[in-house]
Image 1: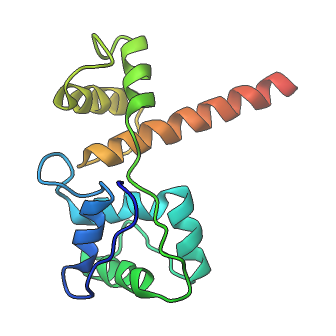
Image 2 (image 1 turned 135 degrees about the vertical axis):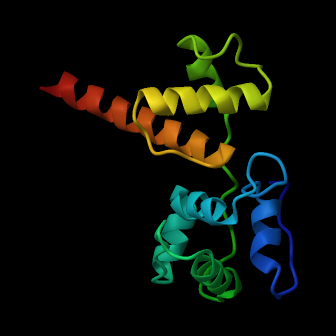
Image 3 (image 1 turned 90 degrees about the horizontal axis):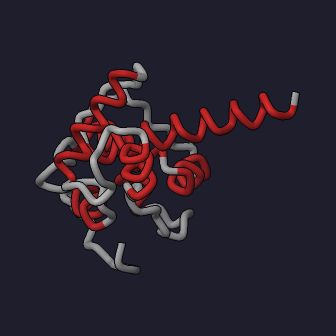
Length: 154
């Protein structure tokens, strides 16, 4: 976050941009491959990638993912407004309300552990990064809410 920024093109462009947008850090989001997966699956980023006919699959090699994101970042066909990493407010509130956390203001390490416990219990995909775990919970909540809405309409 923090508004617009410019970066010089080069080998470090993708990790630098992902770090600036909050997808990559030295603590709980160290895995570049998974950071790219989360980046590519955020709604606005996904739309921009589709506009460029770029599809990034989780099973692609990290080198291929980096190359594809690099192409998107330097493309003149998109405005360059990329979505920041997912916030964890909803995840924190949900985990606290459902007994996985004592409080929604728990330290990130505790939230990460609670996310893993929840994911295992709900048989969600295993993640290596905090952002991916937050995104999986968000996706699950959206799908569950959508199912409840469909059930009510019947």
